[in-house]
Length: 329
Image (cartoon, rainbow, N blue to C red; front, side, top):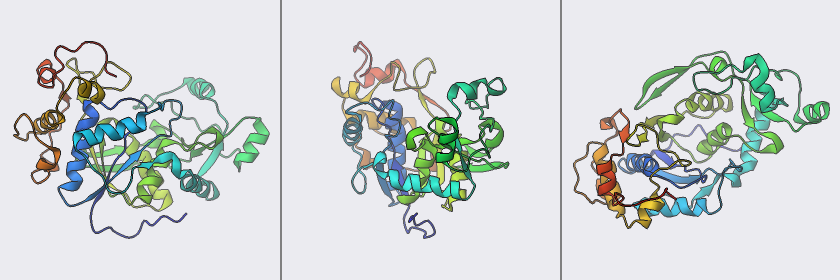
């Protein structure tokens, strides 16, 4: 692998990393604006990466839609947008390197078998804990597939250690991946890279030094930290932003009846109103309309509220959705 990880960049490097599995919504707008402000307020660089590896859920046209939504909000980025699936070579090379060093192994277990094993215990994350069924059984993917007649995946052999993450918003957190998750996939069947490894390799390749994203991804930090350590990559700084919820306290999600940016745009909403709503949710005093770039000089991550943000009926009215019916696009 030819990924530089020792040199310390002279400026901070962040990233916007939407997944094209559905329309972006107000929660995404808030997280991406915070990430963008955090980088730009300190003269840093920021990249746009479209994370399209979840091929079962990626929807046609959503890459272009995500780019359009972010530009509509007034965000920009350095270099051309990067589509994650174009970098399979480096990700697969990292997976092979881990297998060669005995840090990962082939796995032929099906999801049903994993759920049935040990009565399907769950960690705090509600994910099924992998019981280590295939650890030490096969030396190579080819050997596993010959012996089983099944396509094999690769799992990272999680060491027995506590991972200590110092998050800029959530504080110091400790995770025991071995007991809460177990050995996790780094390469899915048929050679498709898994999320955790792909993110780590791409962050290293792009020289990312800081990651600002939703607090629902906090648990992923520990797995990514372990992979960074195993591959010799530097650990970035993390900030996990509290989520945006609806009036009932349910988090916004692409698959449910949420406020998508596409719906807001179709309703004629001024994007500067969304920027102002986000700014006010951060405690920044702004008028009802403001451009994202206007707030770069005064943004301060240390003043970010630590609580979730609810989208109220008043907020929707301000954004021009009070009389809009139907589900978000």
